[in-house]
Amino acid sequence: MANEVAGEPRPDTLKAAALESKAWPYEEARKLLKRYDKGAPAKGHVLFETGYGPSGLPHIGTFNEVLRTTMVRQAYAAMSDVPTRLIAFSDDMDGLRKVPDNVPNAAMLAEHLGRPLTKIPDPFGCHESFAHHNNAMLRAFLDRYGFDYEFLSATDCYGSGRFDEALKAVLRHYDAIMGVMLPTLRKERQATYSPVLPISPKSGIVLQVPVEVVDAEAGLIRFDDGGETVTQSILGGAAKLQWKVDWAMRWVALGVDYEMAGKDLIDSVTVSSKIARVLGARPPEGFNYEMFLDEKGEKISKSKGNGLSLDQWLTYGPQESLAFYIYREPKKAKSLHMGVIPRAIDDYWQFRGAWAAQELPQRLGNPVHHIHDGAVPAETLPVTFGLLLNLVGVLGEASADQVWGYLANYVPDAAPERYPALDRLVGHALAFHRDFVAPTLVRRKPTAAEAAALRDLDAGLAALPDGDTAEDAQTLVYEIGKAHFGKEALRDWFRALYETLLGTSQGPRMGSFIALYGVENSRRLIAETLAA
Image (cartoon, rainbow, N blue to C red; front, side, top):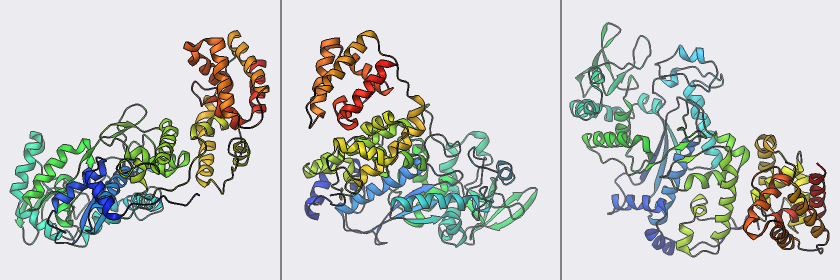
């Protein structure tokens, strides 16, 4: 039944299998086992972190990092009894460098360029600041998905003094940090670079100016602020760090053990790791994943708003399908657009259907094991999402109740309460068809040869016996195709069926579609096509 979960292995059996599994979350988790091979760290837990810059609206790339990190955390928990924590960190003290393309009140935001994101008014008018708005969006989505995490704000950590000791360490090792950073910068940038970004007491802007360390233990620096020499503390939120130095300082101050990052940040990870060592700490474990691309092959950007939003995916597909798409091949660049959703849904259900019968090593390599943390629901899906889309495509404007009426042709016990996951997919199919499929459907006229084959198919359907029609109809479709097109050209026959009956270039297994849509309805569809 729907909420039943397949039996789980004993913890010792799972641990032994996980230690040998080649699934990437287990491979990543074993880095942490090696990191603390003598037991728990002094702080008593292993700390995972994900970072987010709230200069734009959260997107799937942000969610991707939290999900993948959570999967590594779950994998580690299967192999170790050491407690874990996950921090979702918002770099919301960063100065706004450019106005995002996908937010309202751009002119107002432009007036606040350079100020910390938590000091800029919310262009949407519903939160304390722009950063508070974006942070709330991120947390709402992470909460909706059910992630176990703790949210931390850079503004809170700097302002409360939580980072003060680490900031003093940055000043104590100022020259060594400059020695790491300067070789990575262009010559003109080297002349003005400082790891410390004081916040102007006059304008409130995060300044990018050279600084002089006055007293490391007191946290004092000296800098020029619009022609005036200012001596000011960097403690208590009066300054922040350049982000590569900030990243390293954060690892040290919080005791971060694991953080992954996109492939575009490989050099940044290397530099920040060197700085963490300068500060006397071991940098975290992690790996670099490939980036998501939009339909044009361009990198998804939160400031551009290209690619899919979180809400868009969840309008047209369930959460599990998004998690499935994110899990697979993390080191391979993947397109992220509306067209990938149907395939992700069906692939998820194919892997889910196979999970229960698999041996434990195969289960641990199955994406659904990591999506559901080993507690994979037992509900099955009697039809594919692709087939649902084809049904809805033929029905046109239909209600969920009408779709369920047709499902009864194919699934004897079809009912929303018995198949709640299928019921949710019906809603997704109706939405996807309405917004993306319907505008593209164009049924063409059959050629003379195709029309002759369709008339034979109609006659064959009329002669089918009552009962289970899917296999009978599929056999009939094959036989007519071979008779009219030859065995070698069956692909032409199927394409003709899809283009003339369904209005698409690709389609479902026709026997299954005929059984789902109903023999009489399928014959009526053929008649309409022949009469067109």
